[in-house]
Length: 428
Image (tube, rainbow, N blue to C red; front, side):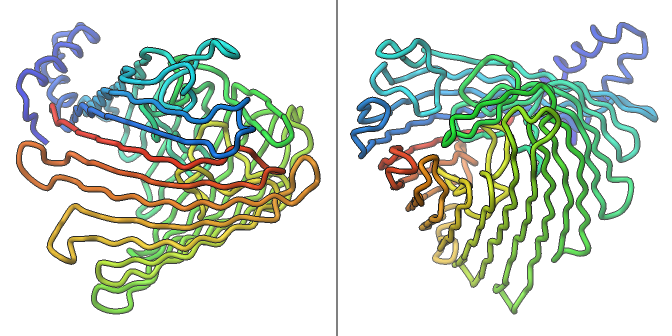
């Protein structure tokens, strides 16, 4: 890809020149800029969450915040030679537009103070830098970035994305086979500017444990355009270890019609010093879809056996079938099912407009009191992406949802609206 912005290209070349300080820098800069990509995403995020249980958080009746964020994502190409070198930068700033002490806790902003003095920050931000080296189809990355693998998914569901600090190797030397391995040392969650150790939390039983090592290894093999399998293992040192097997399959049924299946199985237990106590978990997950023209229908089935599904606190839950905006339905012994419908309005001549509705119900939850807990959620999302013109790729989402839970399980019940506007601007 050739640079679309000469000024940005010059900045990249100048940065490399300072870093290398050798006469060959002009030649190296050509490779560094070649294939580079720089975007700035202007994200406007509003959440209004009305709590329906008066016992929640000492009587808090709502959480409401509004932010404007700017997320710069600069990814360089590689210098020429047998081993190419590059650097990626992810910089974010979130500014509070509205929100006060009585309405904190949406996850859009860090919260400071304690008790009645708790209040959201006026702004927060961070800069993540990762160096990378590539030889053939194998890449080494060291630094800080959004790690997204099935056993460790950085969450990008609020003002700024979660990032991890560590190192990772990925290799695609063998056709259709992708291999991964790495170690993460710390993370910065989506509502925090600081870099901290990773946390495992079991809220039902009041258990919190921290670790500065998350090791993972995995591989994915694509048999054809229809079938992919994956095997993964993750280990949060001295807390838990977890293995994951996944099967993805698409079965065409004719013109503009297909069946899809996303099957997963997790098994996990405590590890090392067992700082969170004895752990034992098996989680079965299946999301089945029927795509027919502009409509897609889904059924999700999920079963947790033993302790809650294991993950680093703050990470996304998209690896399980019934993960949603407000819950992953992953509590101890929880059984859950989902019905979902997606509609693409391109089928009636409005490309870029999509609608999603789903209902998820979970029961059989083992609570701290020994009672059986239950929860259900209803969620809708209407989204539109501008297709052309000066505002091309501007995306607007309206999310409306309700969450209800048995009081023996949680008092965190609410009705919620979110309005999210993302405007990605290509700089290079």
